[in-house]
Image 1 (cartoon, rainbow, N blue to C red):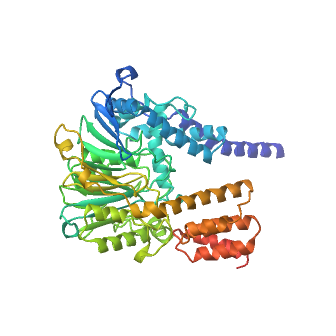
Image 2: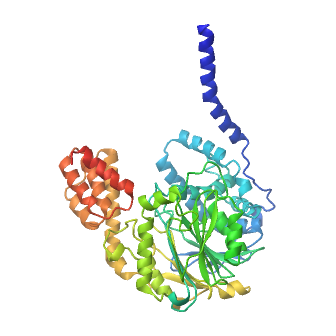
Image 3: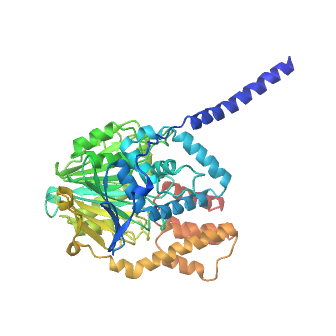
Length: 551
């Protein structure tokens, strides 16, 4: 009897252990990424050069003297994808090399990388049916020109489709990764010209190498509206963009539960809105019929409506928030009556930098009215805290955290946009007049006279201090990882490079704690607590270390 009971117990345990494994295996083998049948092939897309431009049919790629790649692409979905793939083949390879290298820094084991691929396929098993066929066609066409060196992660099509979902995972982990986008819109009396003006910082950070190649895309799809967007090579979704109807779309991550299954990547939804919506009502209708992967606030600027609105979206709800007055401000928390009081939103406001940046943005707007495009860029470049307090270079509570992939200002009613150039928001903003491109078969035109000059005051001084500070952080991390010793005089030079940033003191305090120098660590932790700390979790960690030392 005892043996029978033991066998039953063992069988039950094995069943409990194996069932989840079998379930994941079943999901893996049942995965359908919705790969379309290709009607195009590589030989159809030969390149030829004419001056500074490289052509593939009527589509072309050009490197702007200010450091922006400009891509003009037209045709059906697979044609657009293949032309973009042919023109940006080397850039896509670079982008994938950088992305995979970053993943390998996080997960150095090939065995774990293989396991990760298994989990991603299982998780994204239904991703294909959540992405419209037109965009799957485009991804498939582009994938023709992707390297096969990373086929252990997935086929080129699978990888490119999953990379769009990977962008969402970065946003879903916003509470763990210190990033946060900020955007705003003004119109009527708050705008110097009376017309709608929209500004945004896109603070998605995967390292400086990942942000090296910024690409401005001018698209002429065979259905929907022409549009312009700013992204990186291989990104077919939209992060920031404007279409021929004067509708703008900018994404802002919001806090919500970690997703348990794949849905429409938010950049794909933004692309659909930009390509097919002419006003706020149509943008909301498109957003409402798509189930998304993560929670997001989508700031919509509309020339037709002469105002902005914010589509607040979770995996379960879609809400249209229409601000009162002539201003819309969006950071990384919800504002609508339906979602503002949710548990995740309240925790986000209490524990993150989102509410602080919202207040700072309101403060800067009040001080800058009536707003024009130059003042808008000045707001996006602002590195200080509330009331102009110096809170340290790169503090997450500042609008300018010096991590932005791009910064952009839109003037939808005149079809103009200003796009930032390296580094971050500090280089000049190139001006594009898109009115002729949107209205007829003309190419985009750059307006040199309307270019916003570089932030020379920052570049001449604080830029070098910031570089020294970040190099110091890297040196501290390497010393801690390898058990090394920092050189004499390092601490003084490091702290003087960024004396108002809390993390300078925290990072150096962690180093001294590891070395058993508790008195030095305690003083640094106490100094850190005197600074502006963006995340509640960071403050609690510092206080925990002090408590362990017997503060």
